[in-house]
Image (cartoon, rainbow, N blue to C red; front, side, top):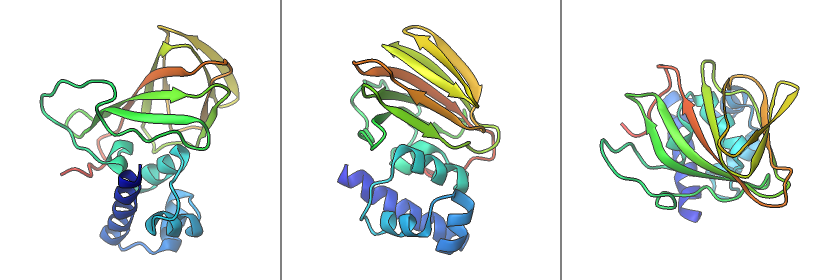
Length: 191
């Protein structure tokens, strides 16, 4: 986790430098406070999944690009083989299965929600679409103010440029695949 935190800190600094953004400007564009941005850049704080999404949306880059790892043209993947952004304060763990591919415009994650966990998500960049498929347990999903329950094997596709949340009301973990499709103007951090 320390390696990922260092990577995120370096990536955040590099993104700010590339754009010539101050901490003030970055805070305005991402919705993340200047204090938190400074803590992340100095490696004093590990951002939550929600904070990482705010950063990715504000900079218009892929989520997996913030975590590291690039697309591989042809590679067999195995669950557990990639870097896991391990359980944040909300009880969410994110594992990139296929990192962002700029040619196809998507990335695929295995997400685990701990029992009782809820993860609130601010709207992503305009045009971002999420595709969820529950692979273990049951997932409660909120879009705007409407909660819906998805059982194992069920899926949902939605425009992710609006508020949404994931909740596991069960006493066991819930796992789901999350394919995130980006519009063409999202940058790859791996070029």
